[in-house]
Length: 387
Figure 1 (cartoon, rainbow, N blue to C red):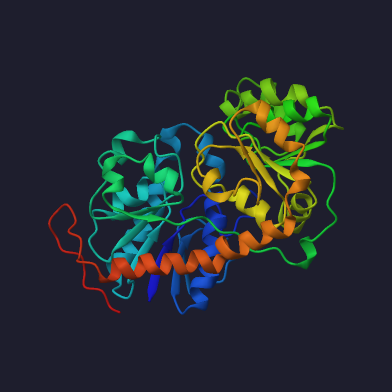
Figure 2 (cartoon, rainbow, N blue to C red):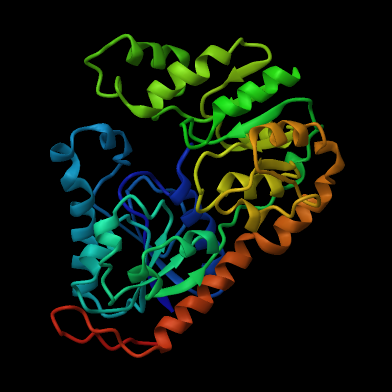
């Protein structure tokens, strides 16, 4: 089987720091290739992941342009996707396209004909109601959780092949570090992640808290100050910057509650693995929960609010705790030592290992390849597949 894996033009695969979708793609490709799948990766030229072929328009990731006005960035995703379309038109050895490019990917691929397409839904499906409410029937989708699909518009559920939980590379011996006293919130700093809730709880309980993750791509206090103090900066009015400045920053004292920006690679794993617990006071119905899975793999008990995917990932009382209110969350934080870190690691190996995710996607690929051909809107039948 040869597939085209479309990661988009925003970040390399894998990214050097924060990059949820690109990290998932980087986690999925190696076990697919171990199982004999040839992978043509559509990303940026700087992607270091070993693949069979790499196609790109841009040498470097274009993520920094996302904050610019739409009329300045609208061509980036379309230029990338036009390159993907040209590749599919010129060759007949691609059996299937696995697409991860939000909206632009399925919108253009649905008009091509050619090999079948599986589009993975990584995001909040409320964002593009008009598009998702009239999703093209020539493309199949999968969710990253059952809760996400339950909230999906009928047009998406009609072409859904089910949910595939996200995976993470399993921890090695280097990450089995001594457990510390600090609690962690790992991920992009924004109102949906609830870092202010975590800070409020930890100040109330007198527990040390480390917040790790970028604020709209910014990683240091100096960078943030420069944005906040400059009304003409394109990020000055960004919701994440306003949230950090108004609701998180007042809790930061450099001692009990600290923000360390993005932490990368092995340093990130060691910091996370040494945490007493990982907090997830999420303020939305999170669809994927990558950071929760990472915590389990590192043997760090997750404690979060009972929303979105969290009840699918956390077995309350065995691999972590789930709360319905901020007050209950604070009470459960004091019980984290009841959770066995080895039980968390066992759960990650059994349910969230890269091989588990790859096998699940192979099942979906086979379903698509053996299903009746879908007819694109213009009435042209999809190309015959080579197996």
